[in-house]
Structures are given as C-alpha cells and as structure tokens.
Length: 215
Length: 421
Image 1: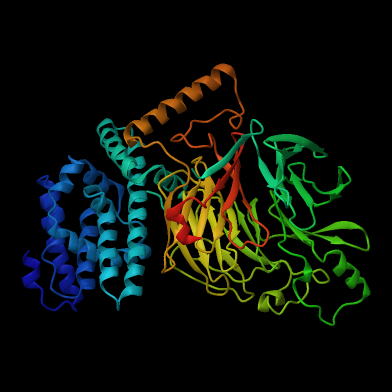
Image 2: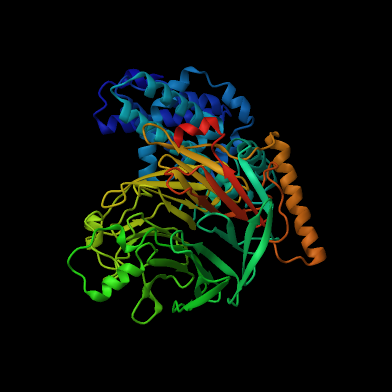
C-alpha cells in the first residue's frame, strides 16, 4: 500500500496519524463498496518495514479508526460480513504471519484500552485466528531456545487473546439480538451458531458473567 | 474405565466424606440427616443416621486421625460427632452465625507437627497430649460473610468459634487449609479468593517451618494481589486477595506441598496461583464447557475439576508450569456439536414445560440431561480424595452430586495421565 513508501521515519507522531487517516479513509471506502475482505487486507498490508511493534500499532490504530468503539459502527461491520466462512477462506495464508505478529502487542493494547472492536472485526472475519496464532507461537516456542521464556508468555497471551475476543463477539451478538431488528437478529444468530460450535458453552457463560465490560 | 465403582445412595447428595480407613462413607441425602454406610462384602448397608440438624446439611468432614465427624448445616449450627461404642455422640459447636453455614474442613494436622519449645505450661502439655494425633481446628464458611475457626478448649470442654469478620463481601463458598495448618484460603461469591492466617495463641505453636506466616495475627490476610487488568498492588499488612474473576468463586484447594492454589469461577474458568505471598503468580485457564464447582489436586501438576458438566475434567501443568485442560475423565459419546446443542435446547424447553405441568419445583432432584453419557447424570458438587496411608500420591478419589451417586475414580489405569502424577 502507498503508506509504506510515504513513510520512512516512524518516530514522527504526526506522520503516523496522517498515514492512518489516509489508510482508514481507504479502508472505509472499501467497506462502503462492500469489500470487507479487501478492507482487512488493506489494514494488514503495507505496514512500514520497521519493528514489529511499530507495525502492530499502526494496524491496530487503523482498525480502531475503521471500526470505532461504538455499537453503531460495529453493527455496520457485522452487517457488512455476508459470508463468515467465505471471508476467512478468501484471506491468504500470507497474512497469517502478519496477524500472528500482532497478537502479543494487541494483547497489551487490549489490556490498556478494554475490549476493542479490533478483535471483533478480526475474529468475526476469521474465527480460527486465535488457534492459528497460538499454533504459530508454539512453533516459535519450540524452535527458538533463547526466547523460550518470552515466547511462552506470548503463547499465553494468545490464549487470552482468543478467549477475550470470543467473549467480545458474544457481547456484541447479544447486543445485536437485543435490538429485535429482524435482519440484525438473523445475522447475529447465524454467527452465534457458528461461534458456539467453535467456542463452546463456557464462552457464553464468560460473556454473561462479565459485568464490567459491556457494550 | 476411570470410574471403578458407582453407587446410587439417594436421590440427591449434597456432600460426602469417607472414614479414615475408607470402609464407611457419610453423606447428606439433601435433608437434615447424615447417613453413614458401611461396606459388608459387596453390599453397602446403612449403619447410622445422624439426626441433630434442623435443616439441610451443607458440609461434612471426617477427620483422618481422630475419627471425628464435623457437620455444618443451613440451621447455622455445627456438630462434632464422636464415636462412643456403637453410637455417634454429637457436641454442639455454637458458631455465632446469623446465616447458613456452607462448608467445613478439618485442619490438616494437630499441633504436634512441630517439636516442643519452651513456651508452654502444664495445661498446654495436657492439651498437647490430647491433640497429639488429632486435628486441632476446623474452619466453617458461611452465608454471613464470615469464616469461623473452631478449636477445642480443654479447660471448658467445649468447642470455641473465632470469627474472621468484615473480610468478605459475600457468602463464603469454600475453605481450604494449607498443609502448614496456619494458612486458610477461602472463596466467596464476591468473586475473590483470599488467604488468611488462622494462628491462634495457645492452640498453634510458633513453628519455625511456617516462617513469617505464623507471625501474622489471626484473621489477617497475607498479601494483596490484583491481576485482572495486569495490575498488581500490595497492602502494607500483607494480604493475599486474588481478584481474578468477575463472577462467583468456588472450590478452592492447595496443592499437596502448599505451593499452588487452585480455585474456579462461575464463568467457566479455573485459576492457578503459584507463590502465594507478596508476589503471587496467577494463571487463568478457560475451558469450553460448563463451569466447575469443586477441584482436587491429585499431585503437584494435576488437578481434577468437577461441576455442572457432570464429567470430571483433568487439568495439568507442563514442564514450564503452564496449566491447560487435558481431557474429560469419563467417557463421552462423540456427537457432532450442532445437533447436540439443538437437542439440549429442546430438552431444556421440554423440562420447562414439564415443570409447569406437574409442578415439579425441585430442580435438584430431577435427573438432568446427561451431557454426553457420563457416569454422573447431574451436577457434581463434591470431590474427595481417597488417600492410602503412607502413600504420597492420590490416584483414587470420589465424587458425588445432585444425581445421588457416589462414584469412585481411579487414575492408575489412565496411561496418558500417569506422567503428571
């Protein structure tokens, strides 16, 4: 994406913001053209060849800009996704690595910012991402010896990431069902069905038990 | 098959406990009585019925050394039962509660675990001799947001209850003694797990092994810890308060060495805490099924959890100390998840309908749906180890639940789990 070339020095905060604005405009237009997969790809690619951390931050922030933190925007994102499985299958495996790189710092962000819509969008699009990330991390964990302690921590984070993200989805689904609006309920029930298959009843309980993080 | 014996004793069992030689079992059949059964050859026969409580008995513990039974009940009282001849003689323990007592546990050992020091007078020597091999305290959790630590006072010949007040914000659902006989862990429906010092002057000796923990006063929590937001803080008076779950907490237990603490939340999570003290290390493990009610450490690295899923779950720690769900202990029918959830829904619907039709109000007695065809047919709410004398590891334990069965499980023939024992 264009952002990569424009952007050489990442230290400049203003430059980051400008780039994110540019990027999020593009993403938003893609979303308007009902190309949610393209939007996700745009968000993931073209990150500057800086440190992982930097790249994660950028994508994270652009996701925040894209989906916002309020219900209305998330609602739009839900309705934009027509085919849950299809969306996942059209995402190339090359993005797995980028996604994998996010999770450790995403977790930190999430811890700081509460449950963000970032995961929501990501995991709706790709419910296995938690599993894949964890799997990847386990690979790293077994292959590299010097980073063993750090990586095992990261694997734990991925696990948490997966749990938290699924809870977040349930939260939004129940919020959607509470609207009573027929198309919204239809879509929410469809996702609910798939998610319960993957995440189990325990996840519903965790969502219901959580009184602090509400939508 | 992991379940070695299954016996239906009643319609519903609230709690159970085994005699020290495991030839007898005491349980409450969901009423104000405690039934004691003994095994004669292959048959279990009812030997005694302990009738003294007025309401449901919520906790039973049978001391391993002194052969005493302690029972607590919703009637707010506790009785210590001593066997004299063929009779069980009750002694009332006035707990001074204004709400139901919910759980009880004998302390793990008497005061004679430590060598005598010079700070005793003649009276304490008598007391020492009396409690040489017996458990000297028991702890009662209650709905009055208090924990009672009860100990026997030789000079007055009665059991005295000391209360830990104003520490819990809600009912105390579980109590667990640390092997050092001083520390007590509690879980509460306010979602927190706390660790207290129960050092009582004249009852406990200042044991050098207990170290700094015996220096803290009665009712003091040892250090404070908060991890929900990756955020820790400690209080000056050293208090452990584990604030990991947003929901009710149940079933706290210490590992055999006392280094690890495990408890469960009502949000389908289990929590493991290492290095309980000023800087505890917490791990959360979420699982995909219904929440747990009670846990049991069978070794330092393996925990069995029982609960609403009607099937014991095995959790174990790998070499790096990271805990994870391993498997269900009972066999489960493998069915695709889609229709499973569908049938559950229709079953629940039918149950609701049947209830309104026949006016069945007691959910507990009604056999619940069997989740995947396990041994238990309803929620398991009690798990008790069956320890052999002189054998350090536990491979056998028993579970009881709302279906009225007591099931004995053996891990010996579970090859894939033996590594963790």
